[in-house]
Image (cartoon, rainbow, N blue to C red; front, side, top):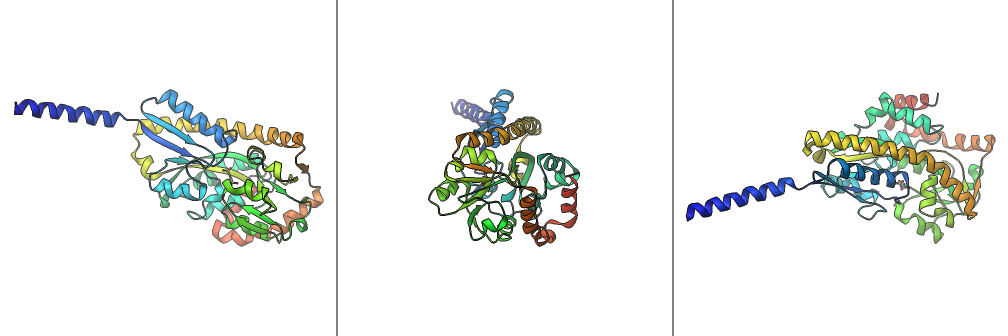
Length: 327
Ligand code: LMR
């Protein structure tokens, strides 16, 4: 009888262990934007591809709109194992590395083709490893697009921004950028921007067409200057601990699905930069202002000293390489 009990117990333990080992690996993907954005669509595509190809082995759960974590908390949560993937803007990593600050330098990239060229080149690819020492793995870049300036007053020349309060992402470079035009930058989470604008606690902000449209900033900002003064792109990250713990064959498949999802997201980014701008124009809630070459030159001139200020932290050679991607 005792033998039988022992056999039954052992069988139960084996089955139990199998059941545990058979549980799918969970990837919680946390982000702050709406679903109808490049990042929102990329995350959904990634989930769909993983569901299709790795059913029962890996399960992706997407949490949009800062539902799970804001960008200021998500990396800490990742290191604690509370979330496995995220794609914060490249502006939100300064606590972990200074080199990624390169992407915030004003007027560095003339367009998204230059950004793409730099990211795919040797320096950009090396930057994917910039977080290694901090226990994070960069899995790939994702585009959103060039940033525009929205405001409660028309912004045509730098002097128009003087004394105005602008929400910025958590980035010292962006802080210096607005200080260079005598504006007052305030580091605030993305989830608070609409209310800050609506209540007039701030005067303006900088963001991409798809973020300005999907979060309805254009409804509470009478002017948007098409400045294309900087880039807002993302780094898809995971923790080294999670990534190393994943079976090799799963890792290969997950990486493949992610690469396809990023490609999809990049296509959406290019489309939305045009379509969402047009929707904003058509809404007539906000006037879209363009800059003459002379006006634009004034912004470039006023903000250029920011490069020098961060050259030591970022590296002069890296800045040169990024500049060369404009050619
Ligand atoms: C922001 O905070 O403005 C952006 O980083 C939001 C996003 O993820 O696009």
